[in-house]
Length: 63
Image 1 (cartoon, rainbow, N blue to C red):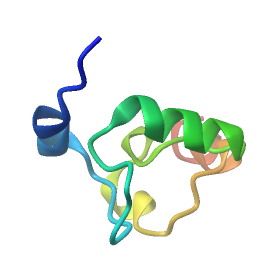
Image 2 (spheres, one colour):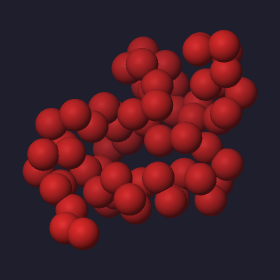
Image 3 (cartoon, rainbow, N blue to C red):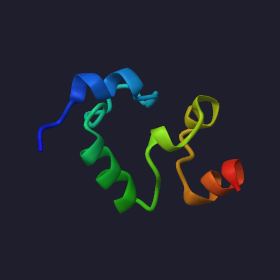
Image 4 (cartoon, rainbow, N blue to C red):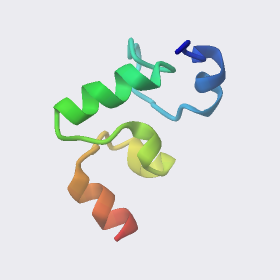
């Protein structure tokens, strides 16, 4: 499968400066799941900017 990085970047709301995984969703998801987190795209922009990517925060926002 070929990555559509440029297309992904149009929708990526990650605000972490210099993130090497930005636009490479498969790497981003794998990275965050290994840390028991969700990626930025799982959160609204105002919550994403807090960098709290925990499952608990996700439940707080959407639960």
